[in-house]
Image (tube, rainbow over all chains, first blue to last red; front, side, top):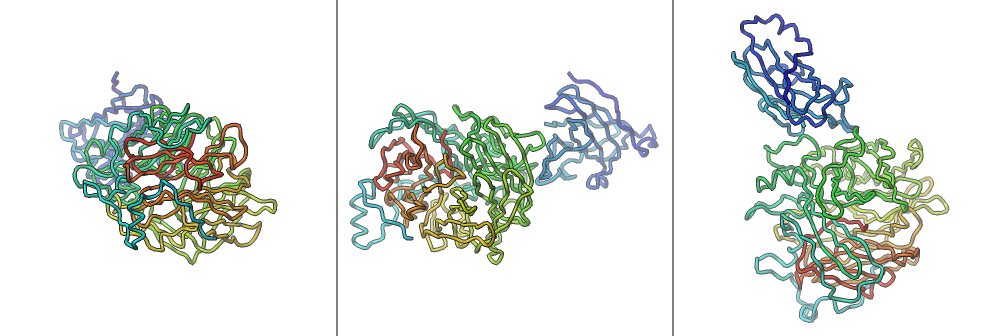
Amino acid sequence: MTKIKTLSAALIAAALIAPVASASTLTVTLEDIKKTKGTVQLGVFDESGYETGEAVNGANVTIDEATETVTIEGLAPGFYGIKMFHDVNDDGEMNTNPFGMPTEPYAFSNNAKGRFGPAKWDAAKFEVTADGAVQTISIN
Amino acid sequence: MSLSLSRRHFLTAGAASTAIVGLGLTAGSASTSSGMPDWHIGYQTAPAEGFAPKDLRLVYGKAPKGLSGSLYRNGPAQFLYGEDDYASHWFDGDGMVQRVAIGDGRAVHSGKFVKTHKREFEQAHSMFAAPGFGTHGRPEFPVTGPDDVNAANTSVLMVNGELLALWEAGSAVSMDAETLATNGPKVWRDDLAAMPFLAHPKVEPDGTVWNLAIAGRRIGVYRIGVDGQLREFNLLDIGKAAYIHDWAMTDRHLVIMVQPWINEALRPPVVEGFEWRPEEGFQFLIVDKDDFSKRRWAQGPARAFYHTGAAWEDADGRIHIDAALYKEPVLGADGGAAQIRGEWSGRDGTFESNLTEIIIPRSGDAFYNETGLDGDFPQVDPRRHGLDRELTALVAGAAPTHPGATALSVHNWKTGKTDTFDFGRSRMVEEFLFVPKPGRTSERESWLVGPVINLKTKTTDICVFDVANVSDGPVCIWRADYAWPLGFHGTWA
């Protein structure tokens, strides 16, 4: 069953001061969630922040179901990329094994995959228009 | 010490080739109707659906009473898509686990590919795509972790009834020991997901498993109980990114063997990142199994190696390790790329190994007792892994006409003698495993069981020897109606 979640993460200041009239809504559906517990930490980035990790917006999504949907409001039309990981044990971090490989699920917009590293901006970017945007992302 | 010659036997090459040798002509390898040399049968792609269980025929001797269990082996078995899309390297072929179940005088063969992420992607697209040991891979193939490129093709391990297909740079892959169906990557503990699990675990006589995870200079050490549960995991730093394919263990110590063959990149294609630094010598990190803070280093002259037999400690506290050592790495010379295309440029001296006893005193430098025996794939009695023992079995007799070896040898470290059976040029001999005779305790009361590809009959033959009388030839031979690809390593369970 799919549920609409309200945004639990605080919107960053830039989003709050953006004029409401020009702000669009991004709807993200998370699919194939293996463990129905913990939190998905999701960040929305523009091109300049994608590599540096400075999000323009984001959400913490409490996971109760194998599919969850979150809406992120107040985005200016333009190109964005999403990075997320499933904080299964709710310790606030993306856990890794002793050699640095992630041991918790992670994903990128467009279901983009990396090659020896995170997915690149060109593969993960998508457009948010005045009508908004929809992303369906598998996070297994 | 030189290799003692085996006596000729009816199994060696037939009269025609003997006559050619007698005339001083080179006995070149025969060709098949496909235009490939006869030995290429060991490098042909196995059926995608695998081999359904099928009885082998007993073609020689009598099945030994009491021989009961399964020989599991792993090796690359996908070398070609379409007409000419060959794998870039033998080591990058998808693993296929072969099982020969022996009991009540019967031997039944079955085999299945390990269903890895790499295999499923490449099968779906009918092409090689994943980067690997000798393969660049296609840019569109995503790599989000080591198990995306895991070929699961190097060895197998049975722990508490669970069959594991092993590679060296990714997770062990769990399989059903009966059906050979793939369950997926093995996670020993949640925080160790996607950690590498080396293809040469060391098993104590009581079934306790020790193994390594390698990432350059960082080494993880697993200790797994007989119940299959991880007991502990520790980290070591060996100071440099030496290539570690195998290692050694006594009853009290782990010996990490740091050959001066360095690979800092560890990025596919791995084969391009190797650097030989003989000036750095061959270093040994000795770690107390019960207290990882108790460690020491020893050093000996530079050698390269792939495989050890096992290690043991004598009354004076000296550590002995038997290993097939090379003067320098042989990987680059042969490459493993040509053979799967049916090409082979012959041998030169750089291919010669030297079965060596490495002796590490309580203090001071390591030194080597070299047998002069050119062979590899050393194996020991599993009842004595880590303990004082006499025997090492290994594949020997480098064939002059084709890749691989033609003989099985057993070296006795106490007498210094080597007992050999040479099948002749029409065979490719693979790793043989010790199988203890039931109810017996002596090291010499074991069989050796392994496959031999027969180039004349184009079959894989499962041969059984008595370890005490190897030069007498096989006790019995079971023959398949077909050959399956050459494998690397196996286990008996």
